[in-house]
Amino acid sequence: MSEPVELGPRRPGDAEFDPEKAPLRASDFPGCQAIHIPPEKIESHEGRLEYWEARTGTAMVCEPVSPYHERPANRLSGLTRLIAASRGAPIETLGASDLVRFGNVLPFDRLLQADQIVFLEAPGLEDFDTKIDVDGALLPDVVLEVDYTTDARRRKLSFYEFWRFPEVWIEVPDIRSPSQPRSRLPGTTIHVLEAGRFRVADSSRSFPGWTAAEIHRALNEDAMSHRTSEALHRVGRALAARSGAGPDKDPWLRRHRDEGRAEGRAEGRWSAAVAVLSARGIKTTSALAERAAGFSNVAAEALMRAALDCRTEEEFLNLCAAQRRRES
Image (cartoon, rainbow, N blue to C red):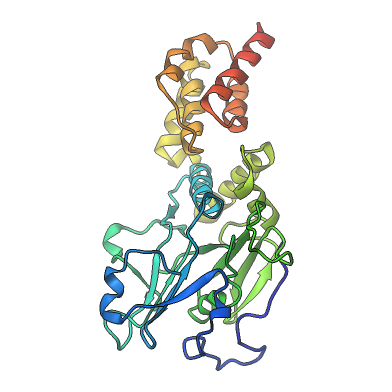
């Protein structure tokens, strides 16, 4: 877990502090540079922004994004799909979304861009504009900030707190940026809102029982480990118990489960394993379907383990072939 830090310029007990009125300093957004974008041009700006305010027309623009920065946010989307399958209800992730405060200046007073946002109760498209109003009722359950070259604790976290976001995760990836201070240790820090202030928690409140250490491991693994697989299933079942859902209420998962139960049909077992590959974002080709018949004697548990442990389609097929030889 990353070390705690005081949230921006706010001091403990200073309940009247407003981060929107505090002077904007370049040091508040390390890894970014300040550029001027007047309010009339902000909506036509196509680049990625950390922050923008109409008051000064100042935008904080980060260094060009890299795979090391983008990977955790994309990985979280895949992980939540697997949790949703165990839960039996969808979970929505919307990526690098614009969070705006509409005020007295057109088109809006300020904009903050998150790396990933998560909704446990998937909202309908009719509930969305192109941007999310931070003063509206529809706030994400979790916001993820990836600090590869940045430090969200300096200022962004104080905005999330002031705007009453329920939970923010700050992830420092295992792969370090050359510009990252050595004092920033890899890890995930979970900030949950209590009585209007963030506190650091050992585990998520939105995803019950999912610890900061487990989240960090899941976001940084090259291939999903058995421990991560077990954690995702545990969290999904905890969410199901909380909401009254369950995996049998998810039509996709129920279909594959029913196929697997039908006297151990190989087709059902293979389909379930391929579905896991898809959920993990592993690209597959026609060769996968063509070789399915050759693994009809591989147990369902072994197929699923290969699907969870592999990093590519070829590695999945090699693991299945090794298991077939052991069982023959």
